[in-house]
Image (tube, rainbow, N blue to C red):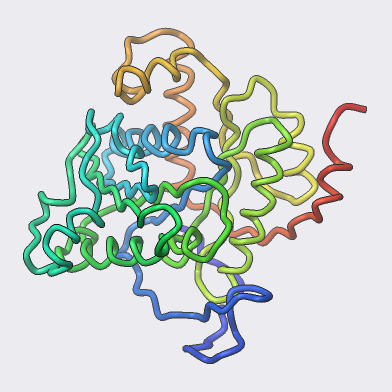
Length: 302
């Protein structure tokens, strides 16, 4: 896999070197998650990140890779098409043993899904309390304590909604590449710009780099490409708004389990192509986000 060309600063825990202007966060020594390719999937809420992540996990598994998918959302619905159920969350299980991690077994928090994909739902604190970053950290700690990352080829963090705080951005501390799921509309492109900004902030102190954009639930890509062309971002894959994708969620199944049709086979081929492209390695991208007004002026019809 291609590595970043820009050296990372060695900042330890020095004050004043946070992850962005006005941030109180500083660099922490985050251990590499084994030899796995680590991907963090972001995008506007409701844009289809969990659908994208689960089918991408299924595609990696189809290519013979060992995959762990980590859902980072209190809804804990990231992996239900893989497991066919809503699995317990790490935070709920930890609370059940008064946070004595030594009492947990692998099968308490890690569940096998379609294609052998290992599924973990981090969960999150109750609304308005706590920080999602803590939950992500505890989940990674558990995976390492139980040696689940040693023989894993790909780890996918499926992260909730828009990035609005350091907790939501915590998976970026572990990731090699961040992928942004976006539709061909103003709101999701506006959210994408915020996510680009967050990734750039983390890239100052961690190895994560932008990996590209996945255009989802869209017949056309003209508005997305206006933005990505402006920033020099590659569109890695395009998934149209098809009824078979909607039905797969209702059937609690990945696309790789649905009854075959020409349009479905085309979507599966696109997922397999995307998975192989990511395995082959993608160049690190540093993109400069736009000002809010610039996005407003850029998008729309002439």
